[in-house]
Amino acid sequence: MASRLGMRAVRLATVAQRSGALRTATRTAAPRAAAAVAAPMMQQARGLKTLNFGGSQEDVIERSDYPQSRYGNIFKDDTLCMLGYGTQGRGQALNLRDNGMPVIVGVRKDGGSWQKAIDDGWVPGTNLFDIDEALSKGTVIMYLLSDAGQMMAWDQVKPHLTPGKTLYVSHGFSVVFKEDTKVIPPTDIDVILCAPKGSGTTVRNLFLEGRGINGSVAVYQDVSGKAQERVEALGIAVGCGYLYNTTFQKETYSDLVGERGVLMGMIAGAFHAQYDVLRAKGHSPSEAFNETVEEATQSLYPLIGANGADWMFAQCSTTAQRGALDWAPRFEEALKPVFEKLYAEVENGNEARRSLDVNSRPDYKESLEKELAAIDQSEIWQAGKTVRQLRPENQ
Ligand SMILES: NC(=O)c1ccc[n+]([C@@H]2O[C@H](COP(=O)([O-])OP(=O)(O)OC[C@H]3O[C@@H](n4cnc5c(N)ncnc54)[C@H](OP(=O)(O)O)[C@@H]3O)[C@@H](O)[C@H]2O)c1
Picture 1 (tube, protein in one colour):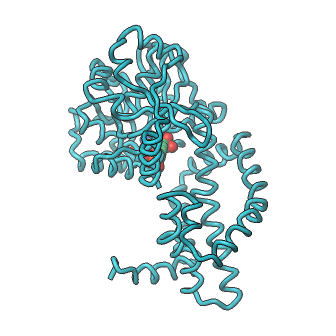
Picture 2: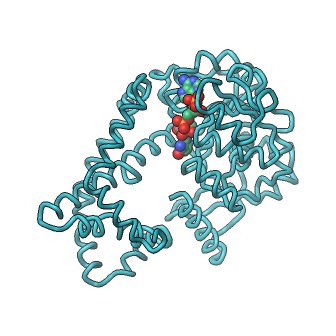
Picture 3: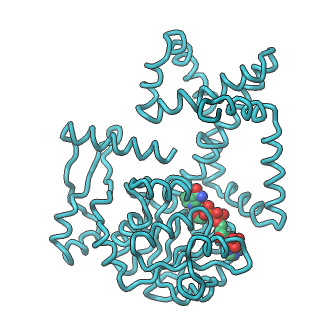
């Protein structure tokens, strides 16, 4: 998903460049103005892009805005303290290390992450520490424990967030739902966010391929007057290729809606619903799976990813086009109220509370494994295993 988004961004930039739509913009936000005073030549050299997104103009920050020499200089007096070494912490920490940044990792010694970090070459006592020691050394605290973990470890972290330090997160969840999480940052430090639009594995893999994932950046508190520049610099340093501005709240709400909706929850529900109807009407498991999942993921969704829904329609038979064009509005009408309900549940905090409650339970991992095993054992996904074995690349 993320790589296709990346392709899309590249394509947009290319199209915009060809049409002359790409232009250099003047920044107006106060921190940007301060940066311009401090380093006028650099500001001119940056060439911030404003692109047309379906009729709206938005700023896009890209890697050429922050070459290594620039972000290295911005953080030359800092120690970047990566707390947590899950998929996202690992991807960002390794990219920072490869980018020559002063990064250390902080994880608990009795969890799985400690050994994982050692396996990746982090050295205990040199750049790998337990959480307290890492916190005492870090100046930019990159809080990348799981979202429930952030709530549980907050009392340990908060005393280290003294003036001059920065709190960095990759999801606004803990801060936005602070009434529930109690993650309330001190008011005298910068609080910033860079949320890569994809898993930490994709963050790392795209970096290794010499590309960058899309990311959102936001500033919650700007005490230093440099928070916007620092979050942009850090976003590029952790491996993003393009950065888009947002707020903590918008990033959090859209992320929660997206993963419950089209990205994961809705699509899984739609697969099951269509598969079950086909099976109930006497279609074989292979036929139901091929018409529901395999053709979607192997043929049609990649076409949407490459060039949009109109392109996908254009590549299909006239029979398919007519039917899809007629049925799309009916699905839209049926689904819209569900998405409105979903957004309301995110906005009122119910989704966050449910997530925190369930994910904080001691038996969380066992319950999750049971739920995932039930999906794995269901007929649709068992049929999928056999279908996938027949793909040429799996022969
Ligand atoms: N995954 C994604 O696709 C993605 C994308 C964008 C943003 N993000 C955001 O990035 C952040 C990290 O996500 P993630 O997916 O990397 O999380 P994750 O894989 O669930 O990370 C778990 C990490 O948190 C540590 N941890 C959990 N509870 C803890 C506790 N009570 N005390 C100390 N350490 C604890 C774990 O340590 P142990 O090994 O010791 O248990 C592990 O290092 C989250 O805010 C997430 O929303 C994630």
